Length: 156
Image (cartoon, rainbow, N blue to C red; front, side, top):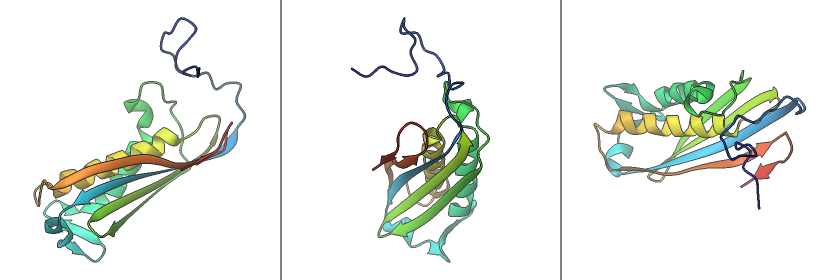
């Protein structure tokens, strides 16, 4: 049976002690997929969706980056981290908006939650900015794609 890292011996919640961990380069990649209808896709112009609120993808990239930097304020046991890099790319394939994030740090703990938060916040921002065009959107997938550094690596 796997022990949950955020529980002590008495099953009380706790932050993970990373003081003994080695400082390594750690990277995490995540993805969010939003299925949208044609009523939104037809608004695509010059690689972005234009709305009265402004350019959707540019705004989502900014919001996702802000979300990654504030992950520790949103998720109780995440460590506050000084991120070294946060990249967010948004592409439209068929009637899906694909958001890919990559977050990097040199430190004692990983950045999976920061990459997932960046993807989530960017997806929610797309939804918020496009809901005036249509509510026909489904944020259907948010997942960790890859993580490197630390005790173990992972690849989807």
